[in-house]
Image 1 (tube, rainbow, N blue to C red):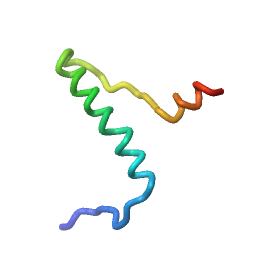
Image 2: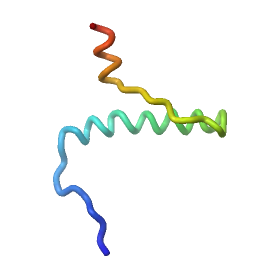
Image 3: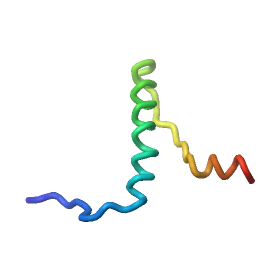
Length: 53
């Protein structure tokens, strides 16, 4: 049975990649230091907005 996949690329996809790739790198680095590390929730857009408002 074939899998489902999107047939077009959206601008949101670029944002998701920009957010997730560094997050995985940080998570794996944290795992190498502490095998019980938990993911950290960080929302870059909310963070940037909080700097100005």
